[in-house]
Image (cartoon, rainbow, N blue to C red; front, side, top):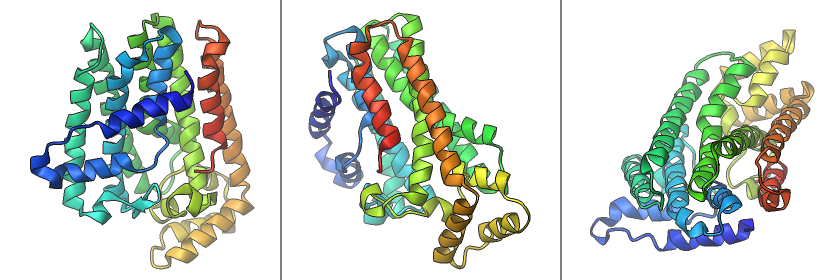
Length: 322
């Protein structure tokens, strides 16, 4: 199976979601965010992982949809917390409606994701339920760390990686593992695919951090510099704080404490990143985790030809400009 085939299945299933018509105020924001143009990589990974071990990927489509709905629930709430105005080039839900709608509709999405999980074609549902719930809890832990780190002047690279591991990477790993479970993979292959997803997820987030500073807003789908304005502890900022000395460190700390000049803040911190070679250091770390991901994928005990789609996804994710 190729990525485009997996995406066709996901997009078709999203269109077929039957929302209760009696409460459009609750469900319209859900339909809106799910219809926005997005990569939909996570549910595609579930289908592709299943296909490594089984030709009948239809039995994994409800699990894949559960992940996509859950992922967008986290985005809807994240946008409220981050005060983001755009998502995938369109207004965020709390901007198009209001914050209360985004919170409540997000809650409904969480419930909807479990409803689709319950439809999954797998005899031992407890395995999938435990994986899904454990992953959901870890993502909340990662978000909590993210919020706490915003209040701190510095964090270590190790702390950053742990936060990203929880907030972003575990879901990619779990999407792959759930597909492998439904496809009939052995425990060793399930774990190797999980590690592939986790390492790819860390690389994916580092790339996101990089794009927020150096990406093209027209391609990226949202304004650049948002992480800078929020003092978000991205890989770039963590690296800059560890690298900067004397006047550069003083200037960096000054702008972290200055919220009254947003445009100048973005410009000056970007200038400091350039001076400190943060761009190049970020690219180096990105490729490190990409190589780790490919190594884990190579350890999955199916012929490499069947793994080409996953290998291509990994390559595309680190080369993307959106």
